[in-house]
Image (cartoon, rainbow, N blue to C red; front, side, top):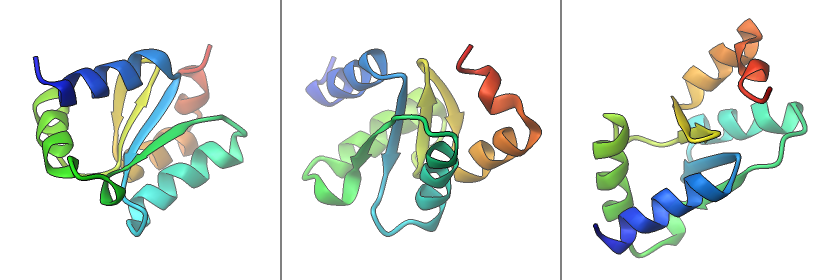
Length: 99
């Protein structure tokens, strides 16, 4: 297993909410705003600040079926991207993931 994969797995395992993001991405901002409005603490991995961004996106692609950002994980489950998170929030399903 690669160190990149280890980093991703560790991040997901050790944090309730992880957002793999890019600082300038509007969908990433949308996902963060949802968790901010819920007053939920999350960690972000800003790929545009990292040397290994392409590797991370490749591994996320293998893990989740998509290498686009954001990739949002709650309690180890990939919820998808910004639009997916917003839909879950609006339907009330997102809060149930924290129970």
